Length: 234
Image 1 (cartoon, rainbow, N blue to C red):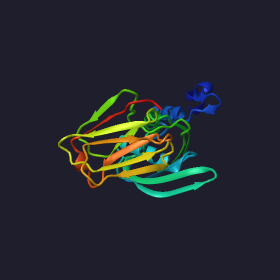
Image 2: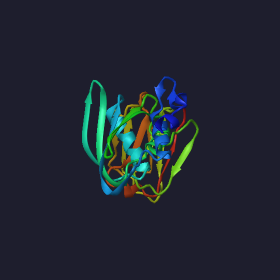
Image 3: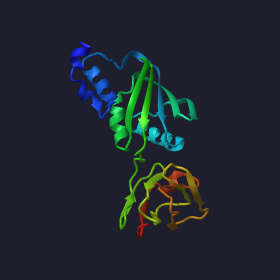
Image 4: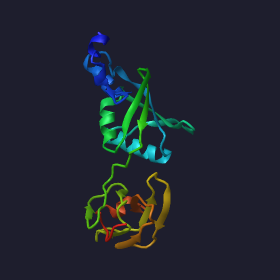
C-alpha cells in the first residue's frame, strides 16, 4: 500500500529534499496517520531553528496563538552549535496538524523542512527561518495606520522608515512605553515617558526593524487606540 500511494516519488520532493509535509498529508488522506487521541492527553512538540532564539520563540508563540493554542508550558530550551531548540507541552484531544502548522508558518516566511515523530505524543519539527519575519503590519512611506480598541501592545514593522509619529486617541491616558528591536529581536532602545502624552515623535536607529508600543502602567490607558505615521524613507 505504501508503494502504491508513493509510487510517483518525484511528487514528494522539493528540489533534492523530501517534502515531509506532503508526505504527512498523503499519509493522513490514506488513513495511515491518525492525529486524534481517544481522550485528551499531554503531548510535546520540539521546534528547532538555526536563527535567533528570541526571534524564534516570539515567532512560534505568535503562530501557536493564531492557531488557537494559548495554554502550553515550556519544558525545555537549549542553544548550541547545532541551533536552538524549544520544547513545549500541551494538552489536547489531538496532535497539532503539521499541514495547518506549515500553512500558518508560511505567512511569516518560514517552512517546515523536517518532521520526526518519535511517538504519538512526541513530535520534532525543524523550521527554516532564513526568510522569516514577524507577522505584523508594516508601516510604509506616506501611510497612516489607525488602530482602535487596543487590548495588547502594538507591534509594527518599520524597516522602511527612519522616523515615526504616534498619536493617542483623545480619550486615552497614554504614558508611552516604546521598545525598538532589530531584525533578530535584539532590543535596541526603550523609551519610557512618565507624563500623559497625546503625541510622540521618534527618530529610529538605522538597524530598527520592529517597534512595540504600549503603556508604562496598563494597556487600558490606550484602549481607545493609536495612530501611526511617518515622513520619509531610510
